[in-house]
Image (cartoon, rainbow, N blue to C red):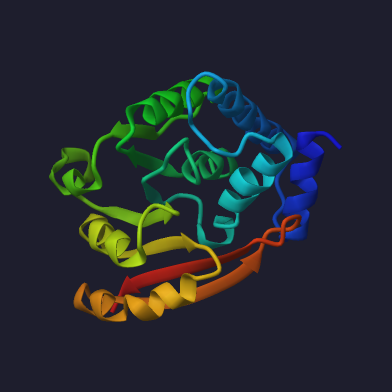
Length: 217
């Protein structure tokens, strides 16, 4: 089974349907990541089959939470996850991607050019600096992160970047609900309320994932 067929099967198991053209673009992105990774450390996952599940399928579990036209901020995006797979799947998204590691942002900019993605900006810097940037002043409809930092720290960094009525989405593992309980006081102090908890398992490894969605309380 080639990577495109593998991805299609995994997404079908997650009840996510994408065109073959979109699936092929996602695999092109992943191939480029793994090619660059042989020279520049971008990801610890080097097996192509594992990377399909742990990078692409995992990122795309957010699709049911997005409407497709939002302004999205990805904090600590690393090699471009989940923001680039989401942008490939939903071209109408306006994406601002932030990471403190320059080589990862350089790769993201290359991948975006390779794939011809527009309305995507990759910023090398710290999340703390974002509220002062002119392009971020209006806030974002969705602020998300995948395995970026603790839930309390993510919420503190993301809260000033939210537009009125916006949402925060934290992608966590099996311990997501424990983190939620531990961070309850900090979240309340930030004026955030958890509106939704989605529990799921990745289709081949069975790895547990927890998606936590927050809005203003």
